[in-house]
Length: 266
Image (tube, rainbow, N blue to C red; front, side):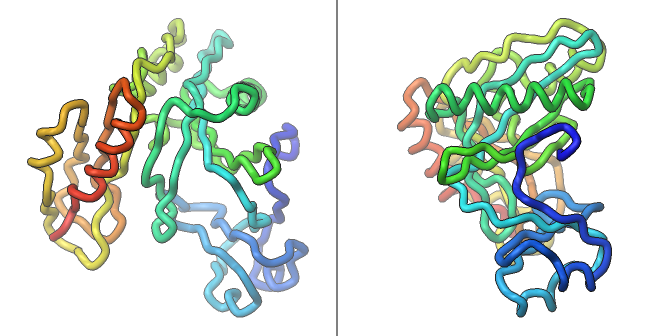
């Protein structure tokens, strides 16, 4: 990030527990494992010295806690010929326990200038890193209107699942177009789209039972995608649901109904 002038929170690379205790980043901060972190795992919040007891001992990095207004994301595609296209900016809400996207809405209603800046940042990263394929760029919009990059994922990503029903081209087709060096598709939004992750319920571990799925499937504009996982456990990603509607408020209303109704238990 530093080498390519990618805007991000102040951070420090940590190799030993001793370096963590003597870190230059003030509390509070976030510790992230440098390897094997996925789906919200490998992330630990350090608020005070007392939290250091539970900190990761493996190589990690720590970054200053960002007091953000919104979490946003842009998916960008680049092919070998250098053509670059972004999907419209999305807004995300995260599950505070699982550190996973819980609710995503597209398109964003943030000011045009914010959307444009976020998309330009994503394009610059794809070009600077010479990405071929898809790159998901997750960002914070802080309380002062500054955009900071939080995470990069060089693959089809959770923050683009709504594109299957919500955009002219899906992130999956766009990824294939990019890696086969074909012209990239039109990424325009077709309608308002909301994506909800289907997570295993707390306190349930074992064969998965999708409680309420029949009720959800009766709703117009609701598309359920299950990942075929036989066993559930707390906060395991079991699938996602996309809700589309020409009326944004109706889409949100249906999405909240899905969240309340569809539960993965054992």
